[in-house]
Image (cartoon, rainbow, N blue to C red):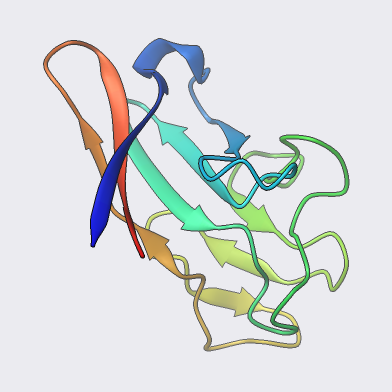
Length: 115
């Protein structure tokens, strides 16, 4: 069974920034969305190096200082924003788990969660 979850308005995420979300109300962010221009990329907030390590060093700090890569603060791994592929670090060649994100005409971002 799947359920659609509304995350936020598109413009709630500043350009070239990322934001974490807790759509299943676990008490911590389990997914994050990166905005580049008008493109949005969502991933599970788990580093593939260790299966339970969250990526940011603090809330919503998913990108490196230049805003060019997703970074795992625990392991130093760098990931391509568009593909989620690890390009540097201990999990090189592995990928973040993508979450399909939908930009609706009403200006909201949605994801579909699978049970």
